[in-house]
Length: 374
Length: 122
Image (cartoon, rainbow over all chains, first blue to last red; front, side):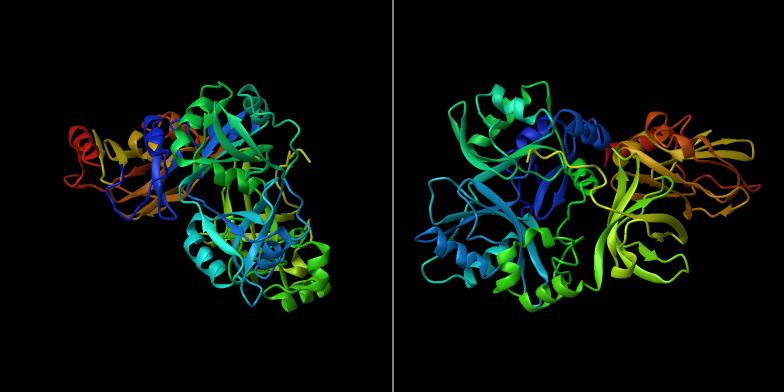
C-alpha cells in the first residue's frame, strides 16, 4: 500500500491490489490508472459491456435545510443551475462559480425522494476541500453542509449496466438518465443515479464505505463486468466531449465559453442571482469571445494538453486543454479553446506538436455519440 | 551483442550497425502504444539525446539514443501498427537502426543480467 502518509486510499485499495491494478497518485489519492488488460481493452469493454470504476475519491456531501426551497435557494447563490425546480428523484449538473463567472469546480446535485430540504452534492476530488470551505462560508444560518467521508462511490458504465444491476435485484430499468433512487442489493442500502462520465448509459452508486467491497465483489462476479481504471475513464470522457475540471474548465473559463450553457436553465438565465451573472448573461446574449471545441486530428499522432492551436496561416489562436488517442474513434481527438469566429464545425486548424503542425478540424462534440437513456 | 540503458532502451550491435528499441519492461510501463515518432534517415543521434517519441494512450515519452550514431533505417511498420511495440518490443517492434562510429565505447551500457538486476530494484 502507499508508503507516503499524505496520499490517501479509497476503501477499495486492497481490491485494486488483488486485481493487479497499477496505482498512481491522483488528487491526493492512490488510484488505479489501469488493470492488467490495459487502457484500450478497458475502454472498449465499457463501450460494449459494463465497466466498474472506483470513484470514491470524489467528494460527497449534502446541503441540509428546513425545506427544499430554502436549501435550493442557498445553492442557487453559488451555482447557475435551477435548483429550485429540481424534482424529487432527479439530478442536475452545474458549476460552482467565482465572482467573475469563472468555474471553481463542476458538480452534480440531486434530490432524493422523501428527503425534503436535503440536496446531495458530488464534487471533484482535487477540489473538495476548497469546495466545502467555499460552500460552508456562503450558506445562510438555516442551511448546513454535511460531508460524507464515510461513503464510497462506484460507477457502473456501459450498455450492460442496467441488466447487471437488475440481475442483483435492483430494479433500475424504470430510471431515466439523471434519475436518483434508493435501492438495496444483497441487503446493502445504496443511492443510485443514472449518470456517469463515459458517454455510455450507466449508474453511479453511493454506498457506505464499509459496504463497498461487498458491492464491488458482487458486481465483478457478473462476467459482463470488468474493473476500469482512470486511464480509460479519461479516454471515455474525452470521446464523450465531457470536461475535466482543471483542464477543460477552470477559474479562467466561464460555463458559456466551456460549452455548458445547456446546464443553465431558463429562469436562472433571466433572473441571474449567481456569481458572475453579469458576465454570463452578457455572453449568453452576445456570444463569448472564445469557445471550447472538439478537434478531430488527422493522422495518428495525438496532440495533448498544452499544444498550441494555430490557424492555417500560422497564427496561434488557442490551446489544447485535453487531447489523446480515442480508442473508439481509432484516432487522435482533442478539445481546446478557440475564438468564436473559428469555433464553427468544419473549420480547419493546425495543432502544433513538437514543432510539427498536425491538421485538425473543428467538430461538434461529442466525438462518440452519447447513449444515455433519456 | 545486446545491451541496455537505465532508460529502458535496448541496443543490439551487429558490426557497425545497431538496432534500437525499448524493453519489455518499458512497454509494460507505457501501456498501449498508439503512435511512434521516428527520426529521418541520415539524422545524427547523440548518446542520451532524443531518438524517438513513443505515445501511449496516456502520455508521450521520449526514447533516448543509447549511443552516438547516424540513423540508417526507421521501422516503417510502426506507422501502421504502433502496437508492435507492445507485442514484440524486443524484436519486430524495434525503432531505428543506426550506424555507429568506429571505436564506440559501450562500457556504460548494461548487459542483460545487469539490466534484469536493475529492473528488479525498481
